[in-house]
Length: 166
Image (cartoon, rainbow, N blue to C red; front, side, top):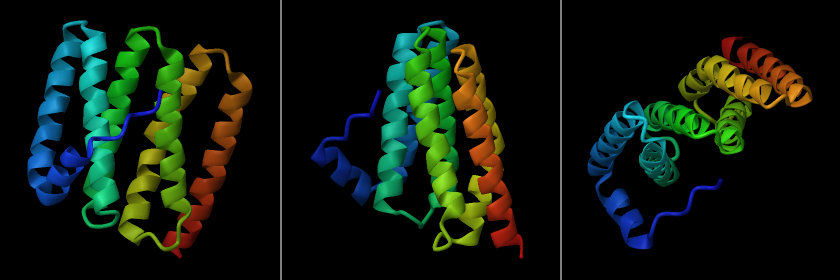
């Protein structure tokens, strides 16, 4: 389930006032967690989806400046959205966003032009991302995909560790 792009006027607000956007992100995450804890998973999905769209916009506007921080926010929003989708029984939607996150982490790890601290952050996040994605795939009985994801992640992690630690 792809995220819809933000309206142009909202994109401009975010660009002009990224700190206000971060406050909006925190409020959306808080509201999402509250509604999830109240078992209102549909509303939680809405809040987490909006938070994820917002942080993706921040990353797009400032691809490297602050990206390490934004990446951790993207990870949090994705995992929370995935949990709410799973609670609704929408494992396919949870899989889609988990795959999107995992692939973006792999791309960051493999990109030599990306600053080393950001690559290290992405490398450190691969374990949790892999666990979430493989758990989802396992619940759906997608064993072949599960093993492919594990193999690809191991390969990328070894390659990245060799590149950034030597």
